[in-house]
Length: 203
Image (tube, rainbow, N blue to C red; front, side, top):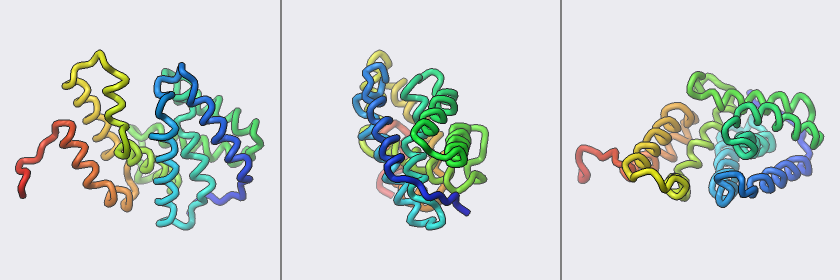
């Protein structure tokens, strides 16, 4: 059963505006593209997935989409801790209820622990935002931007880095069946682009 809230749209809009602002900070390595080519896509995919799970609150999923990488934007090397502390503080400052903030922070913390927790056993909101995050990486220039931001690596290293990321997303993060079905061919295409070739191309 999903978590239901009556959330003030103005508060959500204020938080999104805040995240847009801090994402544009030149000290954030992804500042040139992060909003357009990640956060907005995570939100779009999450909202589409909610259509399959009407018990889930769309407003809450919008909040999670813009919260899930909050710590990374502020302090790339301490992203988990910063989301749990600074993220919580900002949401409370904007007037979100303590219950909503606690639930949102708990969801992001579970998502961040996808390597040790089975996302299939997580609450539906966590499964959706985790899946949306992984799927968003397969849309637009996300994997190409790794090359752009790491010009000192050779192409074989860059390809291997992206294979590791892609497999981690597919094996650990993308758990919603509708997301896996919709993105299966994209996943195969990206693996092939990164050097994981099929036994045959014409069968």
